[in-house]
Length: 421
Image 1 (cartoon, rainbow, N blue to C red):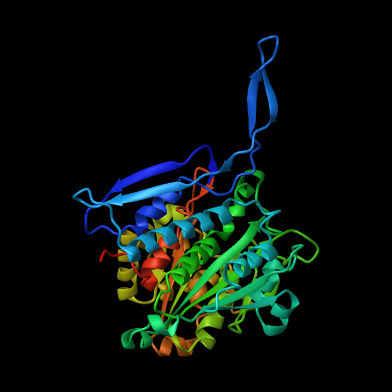
Image 2: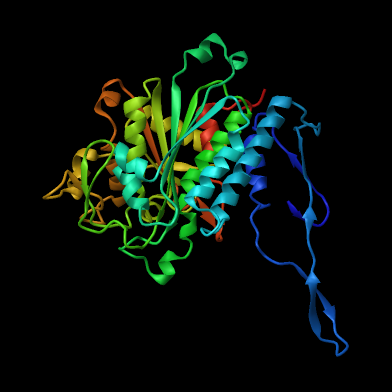
């Protein structure tokens, strides 16, 4: 963290309260992205303030000490490691969300992934880029991103835990798949946003940032469970190649979508990834997608709670508990696909991409659109799906919050994060 002098923070905790969520909360107070120039004011001969040469701040250390209920320093290595990695994961997510789109392109975002894991033998990375997306049938990601300077990408990362951290019980666990919406900038496409509405749309990759930060921390903590991460990276730009309202695209699921709102692009990219995950990952029985998907989320569950939609009641309860444990709060939406799917009716395609009636449970509808692309065989084998719309809690006061990191760590069971030894 840049600044002047070290910072020392002492936190007194109840013996049963986990350290990881606290560390994540503290780290939000020290954002990593800043392009301000620092200058020192001096007095001129006339007594007026003048700007001198830039004064460069140096890196400083933030020291956090946890004390138990008896005032003793907590020294449990597993818990301290979990706190450290949770804090780093949150700061990573915040930095990415705060970075402006000229710098954080789809290409640069993918490079962040390689920088994190190229030297880690437990993580493999695969990328499907640009025209290859079109050739392989990822019509959602391709069409959303094809109008931009930097090509759209689907980044697929797989973490295989080392054998020495696995027990027999761990080896029987199925894999978890995380999916993140990574729209590095959202102009609305040809359904262009307003001057006011477009500002802040660098934050539209907050879902991808949250799951990446959580995935990175889980890997560093050597979580004893196989985890996959799929990032849908694209810029919803305006240009001669941009997808048009009235175009019909074919998603990876094979279903056709009539575009009636190019500004409803997040569900298109996520649907491709969810279809891929449920078709090809036979060892996974849980797919979690996270996105700054709808403004309607704020109407539904507010600025501090993400909205969740899931095909399983027990998964809904698990997610709410994980939100309470991690500090990444979430609350259930109406789940009624049989009542809401009519909102996407199309005369010429399998569905439209935006609702007919915006007053009819719009946030739920957006989630059900993604759900409609889940492979039927995955549903038949009782696979679980959890949708997290975190448009509200993903930012606060024009800064990223790192929402999603703690929720992911809690859901995947990262060692030492959500419990005390």
